[in-house]
Image (cartoon, rainbow, N blue to C red; front, top):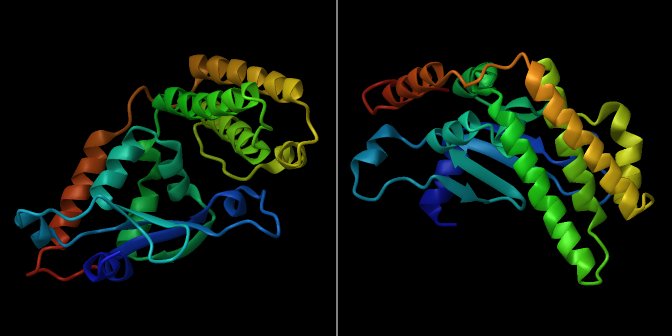
Amino acid sequence: MSEAQQHLVEQHTILSVVVGSRAFGLATATSDVDRRGVYVAPTADFWRMTKPPTHLEGPLPEQFSWEVERFCELALANNPNVLEVLHSPLVERHTALGAELRGLAPAFLSRKAHTTFAQYANAQFTKAKNRRERGAEPRWKHLMHMLRLMISGALLLESGAMYLDAGPYRERLLAVRRGELSWDEVCAWRDELTARLDQALATSPLPEHPDTTHVENWLISVRRRSLPHESTPA
């Protein structure tokens, strides 16, 4: 990471949270601290031929940040990893703009979540299945997170709200992580959750599309407030 990139993360981050097992209530003694954040590149930086980076890794281990515009694009597409940033209970840093972004969370949600959550889960399951077919042991931790993601997606579609904590599913999910459920049991649970996701879509209170106009108007205001001649948000 260059000095300029580090400056973007350290001086222009508006929101930084912890995600992953610690936010899901599934952490163990060896769990990493996975940090995700959003930074606002100064508006004047976009006037140059070389544009600010859309995302950055670091400077801390397991830290990843998005520039606010890219973050909004992904959140409007109901990317699960990005939506988790808006709903994590473990907020390490937020500015006034970060609070505004978190307040916008409902505007990003839509029935697109059915597709995105299912796609992410299917990708993880395909990797596990291929690994097993090669004679290797499945990565049970990845399967635990696949199932947790499907549960979160089903709850989102059913209620219209995002839930990260594993809640009543915690012990069974941790049993998956420890390899205490058989492959067939994991597959059966996955099938149940797939059916639940499909059923939830039909009656979901979520809108068909996110409120793109609301998000875009906020993003425009952020760019204006980040101009050199105007005060920089705290």
